[in-house]
Length: 109
Image 1 (cartoon, rainbow, N blue to C red):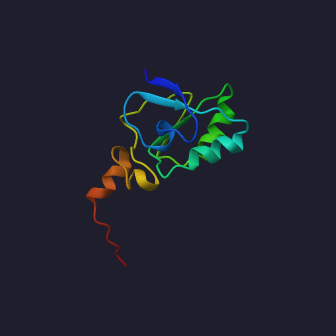
Image 2: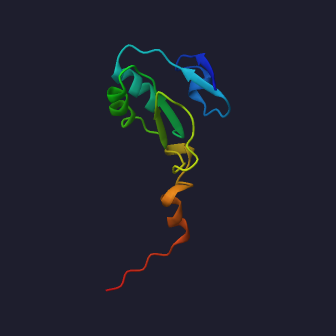
């Protein structure tokens, strides 16, 4: 399980893309503030939404600009496409999306 650390938006665990078993937790007042803070980073490899209401969590997750967004979880699915947004990379590894890197598209007319 990852180490959970209470953090604010101007601290390194939130502002820098960190790797390893760490999960910064940011308090917030409104859903809009949470989304704005999550999307203010230049990175977007992965993120998570934690809530008592999974339906609200799923709606909020679609607004987080990350390659993978979990709801009430933060664990990679090795069979799912993996990759980031913005400065966290371009393209995807794994899944059917990865197969496109090995193809040449040809249009026949």
